[in-house]
Image (cartoon, rainbow, N blue to C red; front, top):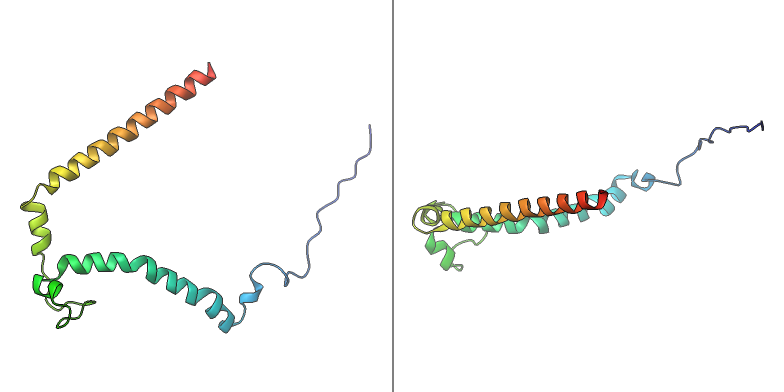
Length: 121
């Protein structure tokens, strides 16, 4: 038999040159992490805020942007949501969409399982 000596991996004593050590000071952390993260978060969440705000704004505030603030409402209403759910065929359309999505997912899973079992045989 041969004598093979196993060496333990060396542990670095100073890890200042790697990783995220450049984020130690607050100004650097602010410029390189928090401000870009805040901008990205604002850009990603603003459409959801705008959709929710538009859903609860009264009609006169939706149409007259010169008199009313476009980013806030003082008189929210659920009239638009009530009309969507109870005066249109939206629940039927939603059910149809869910039915097609679930059916397509089930067919995809079944076909992939059949393909997998045919390869193993």
